[in-house]
Length: 315
Image (cartoon, rainbow, N blue to C red; front, side):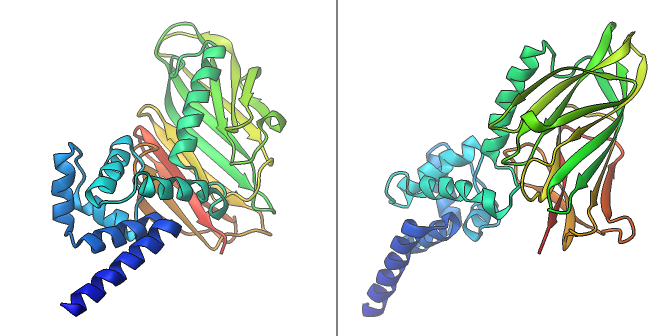
């Protein structure tokens, strides 16, 4: 009996320490251990609160392999505070703290919060340009070349686009660039390289979002195809660690190539996918850096809606 009391005292002390300093997954694991609940029982209690979370997800959360981010998951965290008899906001506070500190550890990594903020800003900027989300164009092919500079910064990117109009009268495309955290979109340059010219440009400093009209020299009819090329010069932020492309609609072929300066070569590179900004990353696959060309690439024969990207580690 004395041994059991000592064990409970140790578990309680570990929990108090974890709740004060975190991180979230350690605090969650300590809370579950202190209450002596198997994950199946935790899941059962959550279901009584009207929250559905799988045992696998709970296991990932307490291991630190994933972090709850979706609205449903955050509801589960608040319910866990009650189920595990924790102070209000104790786990939520640790999640917010982790989100605040995620930037410096991976400079270009984008939190769910940053995606949501950027999406709201993008809607407003597109509304200013009176542009619908799809713009009346369907992508048949898109080849992007991204350049990373000697100081590990995103220097810029170039896009080669092949589109088909699905309504009459389309005469422009709105290009979107989302710079790395800390960038200055007002200092970026848009380059109309082939079969287009620059129209109106709008940006939002805090989120690093820039949108630019690319005007065609013709009005397309439904079914017409068009080929054009453009680029963004950036170089306004710090070290970059990934390039992410979001797709609102399924489309044609997409190829992404990231080229690094000779003075700044990454230690490792990989590709990844996400169903949405709130979903965990999946589909991780290591990519081999070409020594001669200092580049990595991915090719999707037919993209699906969601997020696709290449990430890299400097050390």
